[in-house]
Image (tube, rainbow, N blue to C red; front, side, top):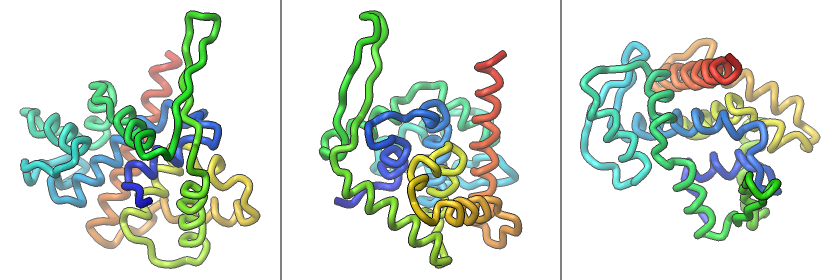
Length: 221
């Protein structure tokens, strides 16, 4: 089964038992950042001086991308990437729920609900297709450890995993974990971005991290 880029992100954000854990809050911002990345790759938006600029208002034929594109193109003002990430997260566009539903329909994950003291409910999404998840993890590990040139989607996936605390969750048991983690950190620092794509990836990485940091501060104030 071939997963979409966004489906891979949600699958990797879950542990095998189906909990988001430490990624529960962060993945909301990472997912919106990933959708902005997809819109950038499909040339619906451009990133100019850390701001999002609409280039093409036509549908992408992807319901999730179109939901976000419609919000951006309806705005009368331009905003920074970080601002758009925060605004879209709090608009509750059902982005994560839509992807979870897709994965459930494809029988990649299940859905189980638990009652705590009758009043509180928790939902988990246990992985049903463990071999598929392992294949995704192993492909990432091999690409990073081998030092091959990564494409933009592979690099963006590492950005999300690093920003949303998903690296140890997926690779903590690997013998090469320390080396792998170090390489992921090195790749996602973007010390000397050369191309327009690398500059966009760096801008997205910075915006996601700052949006998560700002949300953590607001939660504890």
